[in-house]
Image (cartoon, rainbow, N blue to C red):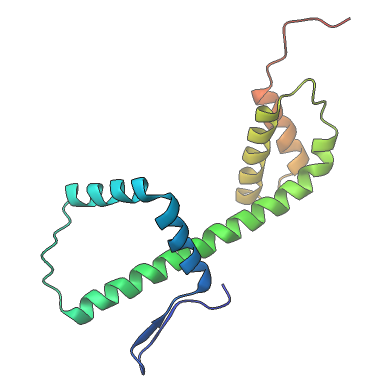
Length: 146
């Protein structure tokens, strides 16, 4: 992120990155049911709404929460970038796959598994892994074409 979250102790201000603000806006607009479920789970798991902490401790919790959200957003963005790069490396192999013999869902799942495997084991050959993943998922039709 270009403008990471930070806490300016001199001015007692917390700076939130534009990307984090966009995430918060999107969550507010699109994930209210999921957020409500998270709040309900928090209460069920012991959230106490009688804060005993000082205002300074509560403020630090808010700063820590936003810093964590920003870190998680950054990590996910990095993971997506790596995934896109891996998929681009697989494109030449994907172009040689007969689309009549392999459906889109099988291909997508195989690419996803190959990308994950290549991230864990970068020394492996992506084309080989893709072929193995395709073979694991491929279900040839019982019709014989002549």
